[in-house]
Length: 138
Image (cartoon, one colour):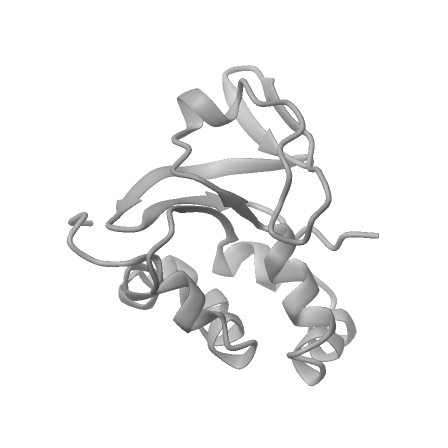
């Protein structure tokens, strides 16, 4: 993907993030992630969304300004952090205001236990890392 587009535009153009694109729009985060940044967005892929029970997804989507917004904020880090840098941070603060554990296992970067499966998608206002799970903060 060309780095000439924002995180919001990149998500919308990538078939692997169609469900995430809808979630971002529902919570009103398309403006934020289309803005100046820089942000690092650890975005669950469509495959990750399909692995979540329907009742949990329905609960998130039914409360876009509450539960869904909280989940999305947990997946956003401040700064432009490619995997090579992100894996050295250990416990960076998320947009939600709480820290997340970043580890490395067998060469793969893990974001709160979710594996980065699509790393380093460069955007004009940051970077996207596709992850294999949705993380629901406590």
